[in-house]
Image (tube, rainbow, N blue to C red; front, side, top):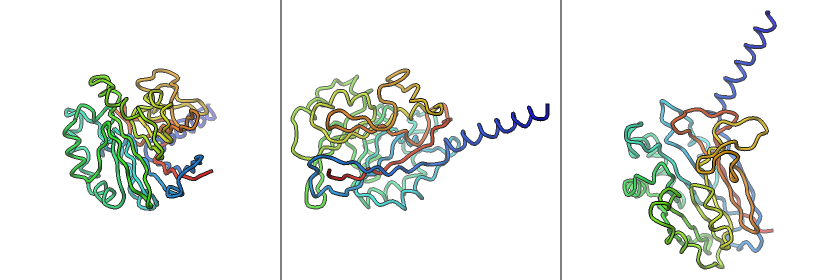
Length: 277
C-alpha cells in the first residue's frame, strides 16, 4: 500500500510539473532557414515571431516574455495574431488587456520594424485594434503588401486578414495579394495556417502563422491532436511544413484561450535567421 501511495504521489507531482512548465516555462527557438537564391542583403536577417499571446492576463498566466526578448538580437518582429482574448465580458477590451504590455510593445516597435496581423480574437475588434496598433507604433497589415527596405534592399511583407474575417468579407483582396509572382523575397504573415493552401503556389518564400496552440493539450510523441478550424489530426498542427520552395511555420504560441491550461506544450517564441544555400 505504501508503494502505491508513493507512486501516486510521484505521478501527481509529475503531472503538476508538466502543467506548470506548459504554462510558465517559455521556450525560445532559434531556427536557421536556408533558401535558394536568397538576396545578399537578407543574409543573416533575423525575424522574431510572437503569436497567440492572449494578453497573459495575470489571473490566467503571467509569463514574462520580455526578459527573454531583451536578450535576443533580431531585425524584424512579426506578431501573428491573437495578442488579446478579445471578449468585452472576458477580461475587458483590447486596450485593457494589453495594459501590462503596452510599454514593452511600444519600445519594441521603436527599435525595429514591427508588424501585426489580426487573429480570430481581434477580427471583430476592427477598427479598434487598428487604433491600438497605431498608438503602439506597430504596423497593422490587413490584406496589405509592403516593401520594407533592409540592408539596402527590399523584403516584401504580406499580411492578411484572418480567415474569420475573410469568410465574412470575401477573398477578393486576399487573392489579389498573391495574383502576381515577385522577384523579391516574400514573407507572409497570417494567423490561421490553413490559409497556406490558398497561396502556397504563388511563389512566396516563408509564411509565419499561429492559431493552433499546438493543440494546447498534447501527449508525448504524438502530433497535434486538435486544432480549431481544422479539427482532429490537423494538416497543419505546429512546426515546419514545406511545399516546393515555400516554407510554412506554425507557432505553438504563448497563451491560452478560455480553457487556461496547456499540457506537454511549452509556450514559445521563435527567431528565424535567413541564410542562402
